Image (tube, rainbow, N blue to C red; front, side, top):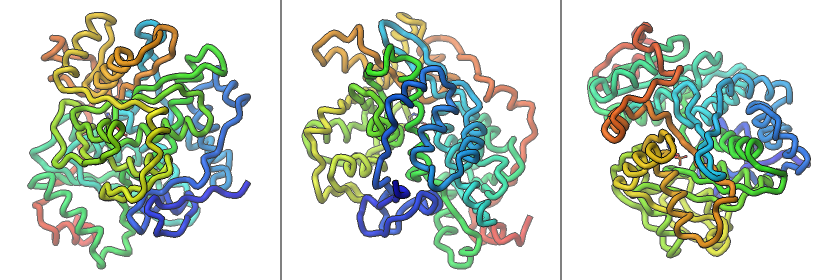
Length: 454
Ligand SMILES: *Cc1c(COP(=O)(O)O)cnc(C)c1O
């Protein structure tokens, strides 16, 4: 078979290789890259997954996409290095499970995508003896996920700007205790100031030679690794090769959900995808009515990483179902809504329901959830109530996307105890921090980038 190419969902840019899509991030026409072919895995290969470890399955799934661009032994090395932590599947009741994607270095499911993207970028840069300089502004969590994902990679330098007074000490320490190729600057200003400085640097002709990149969340290199954990959960839990699973995915920008859709299109036996969102309900409304209206500004809910009024990966889903949506959310060609409704259900969960779910899940099942996972579990309960049939025998997997210890105030308020920190977040207090401070002044920042000031 020919090498898989990647096209832009806006259809105005040339097709590119995986390497180019990865290093570019967004297509020049502002669309998102999609694989022209989604390779299928054969049944016997998937049957073998049952006894395998996470990196084995990650290798098999990613190899199907990358076999013409990354040598097998290299890919093996990258997945072993990226996935050196547990992926617990917790039994709750009947055949319902929670998959905890919170054991990585920043205790968030974003580690799965970011770590693999970083390693793939580093591999291609190494081939060309090129370096990339990643600039990110953060209000807390994105910065630590990026910093950890790229930490220690030889061909990539990372610079993170954060608003000095707007991040918690724990969030700061997750970024500043790393060192090596990760530089951190506290800005005397707000998050918007940090973001404005970064944006300005990307557009500054004097900085073109620095090879600046943003490693943002719409990168195809983040999407493909998110197909892997669906295969893993199914392999561990399905009673036989033909048994289908229903996945419940707490969603914001829909990267996680697109990973699941790619897995399904590769041949994973899936019954249905249940997309659970918070009060930002533009997608469930669209799925039901066929009318898409962004929510501007997005609503502030407890599951803060899902406060998204226009999911950036929605254009990919629309594309997958034969439609076309541009980066602003305008639909010039409707997707096959009937097919979409056959495959997926989407439910919106309020903050009050999220809190009640955290309380009930603990009371009934000793299941500890944080707000994002609680939106998922509530989504499962709503789906079961609204859908006729016997759901006791069916296999359900709810994704828990962050560790409860990242939300101590909410857990304390609802359950009256403090969740224990996962190993990844322990011991930060005693480690040395490396960072400097700077005023929110673009010229000082630019001088710093050009190496004129230390
Ligand atoms: C980013 C994030 C989500 C949403 O994932 P998407 O891929 O953007 O839909 C859910 N939960 C947590 C904890 C996150 O950080």
